[in-house]
Image: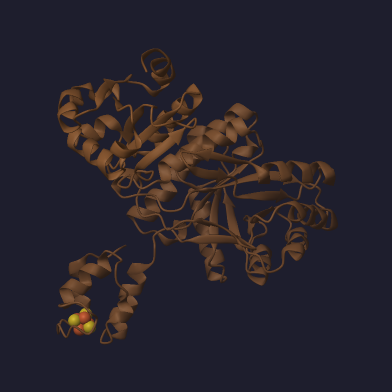
Length: 446
Ligand code: SF4
């Protein structure tokens, strides 16, 4: 459990010698509590205090990193149950599963297509994180060939799925030096699987269908020296998965219960149909998976999951923003109108897409509203006539534009009078409330 600033202060020497760079031990303690300073900066901490502080500094959910070449997928290090309490840190990795029973050419084609899938969402390039290769054949050589085939067409991190330690060991050979996730260890194979994972430096998923079983198995594996564990509850239904995952995360965060302090692996790909798979995957992203394995690679499914993940894992206190400035669409001239909006990414891209789609030339003035949408920024005093006029001046629109027309978003029509006063010589127009109505407005009114 994380210590408070006061609790940390009680473990410090309390001499206020300033050698750590802070004026008092209390100031240093507060920075340590906020994870903005390193304990090593104080040369006088006793060994006993160091031990207590480093134990408290361990994250309640261990960070697990899968690696392959230049690609990494991280899961864990979460500290809150709900995003609004602080933020979520590591987005769940999305993996697509293939099986070694598939013909290798078909397997490679599927992996290559999924590997190449990228989509741009509000200025960010999103895509899948890795692949899971399942040893469905039960044959070591066949499995190793399938892993090699995947590695030929993708450089992303892998999971190796199977319960036979000898087959998994064969699959590890073609990816020597990487850090994959082995899925996994169960009550029957855990000792042998622990040896395989330790030998390869791989992370190991613990498979159990009850909370007690999961605790017993993860404790045994930790005692055997496997530190990098992932919990894989063997549940396939929406309700039982939600309950199991929530209990794991609550016990890890609220009780600092170490046997459950690991990321969770969800396998929606086991669902009986694609609709259930989509629901299980969305639920797992929201609560509380660190890795998600899909069987279906379909852009219409993956896009929705990537956007959901992005929206949940952005910092709620730092909205996604675009750079304030003047953006040009459809080769505008000095005669073309100026539309104005805020720098909240979703607002910007909604407006920009419609302006571009209209086919009509226009300038889009994006003001610095600290990443808020139009109405929120207006209510917070971050999007008003004075700020818009300041942006017009800052980006030299008086010099660039000969026919001075500026279009306000319809939601802030109330600003039009003030803006006329702030911008003498400009014609202030009120545009539509919704971005989707911009093309029609531009065609009819500009
Ligand atoms: S170096 Fe240590 S003892 Fe000195 S002020 Fe900083 S925390 Fe206190």
